[in-house]
Amino acid sequence: MAFPKTTWTHADVASSDLVPLFRSCDAVVHLAWRIQPSRNLELLENVNVTGSRRVFEAVEEAEVPALVYASSGGAYSEGPKDRAVDESWPTDGVARAITDGRRRRWSASSTPSRHERPKSGSCASGRV
Image (cartoon, rainbow, N blue to C red):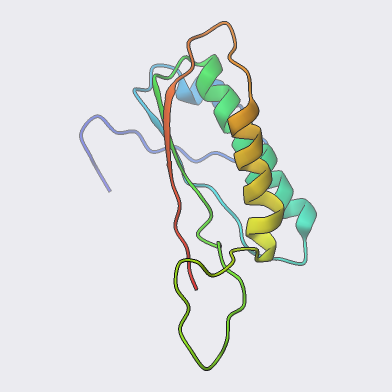
């Protein structure tokens, strides 16, 4: 896939050196997220919380002016089999409750560094 002024790079949010990858970027779009295997909470935490924290910190250190990240596509809970549910249905499935909540709390409470904080935006998606 080719787009003007766009560079695609493979990296692991949990272990790659992200700062050099982000230097001179106009924006970083962070979509990395795991919902499976739900039995491996350590892996989910490492990617979803620690990995996201590493992305946010690298964006700040690289002085990227904009960050966009998406909330869990796994914002779900088991629902009834005999009827539809609406947006008020709880979203406390394992991936959401354990990792997305921690990522959001960390993101909201982090303090500014010596650099001006990047503009950021998030969007939540859900499956019911």
